Amino acid sequence: MAALPTVVFMALTSERTERSSERGTPADSRSAVAVVWNSTVGKKAAMAVSGLVLLGYLVLHMIGNLKIFFGPADLNGYAAWLRTIGQPFLGHEWFLWIARLVLLAAVLVHATAAYQLSRRDLRARPTGYRHRRARSSYATRTMRWGGVILALFIVWHILDLTTLTVNPKAEPGHPYENVVASFHTWYSGVIYCLAMLALGMHVRHGFWSAAQTLGLNNPRRDRALKACADLLAFALTAGFLAVPIAVMTGAVK
Image (cartoon, rainbow, N blue to C red; front, side, top):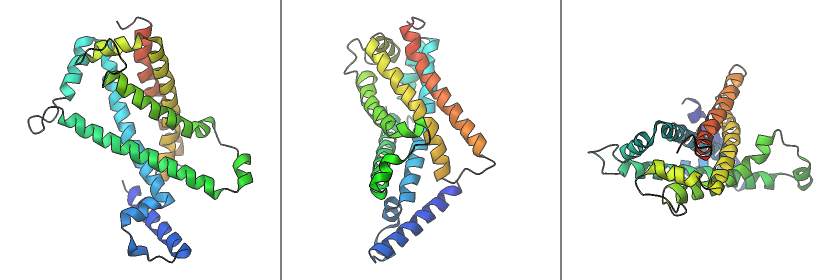
């Protein structure tokens, strides 16, 4: 991605300028990674890249989830196959654990950068301006709370369908049956549906913000990028919602 080195260079330049003017600290007294991370541009870039990693996972996860419509054999077989990816070079389930660690790192980077940027933004505003500022859209106003909702949902989702802690009728090694058992409880279906609506809003705004941060937007591409953001948000929301709705309406049993 040609734009990413440019973003890193901007982060290095802006942070070194800030440090030099504010504290007189030599620019090379810290590592380049620390310089980039501590700059506003660097945090936005880290948030954008980690968000795209998570977006890629969500697309693959949604496609895998839709195998539930082909019956227990397809979904359970797919889940079993995931545990064998990379064999014999990798051990059993090694790929899953590597993927989980990458996703955990992406979530931590994304959440940390979002929180620190939010605090930095609040500190930079005059007190009166904080109350008068009009937000540009509903999606922008709810990005932060949407992130909190999704973070809480991730914890619930892991307890429900990974560790099976809150899914009393779960059977280890039978994801099809576990999904059906989970969404047969009304509260699990409601939690999932609300979280997926929040996810759609988050993806729609986040994809466009990531494109801007990484310098991918320009007047000729803006319409296409916005259309892509809308399409991704709609497809992910519809794809993820299809499963609980199908179970709750009896289309999947």
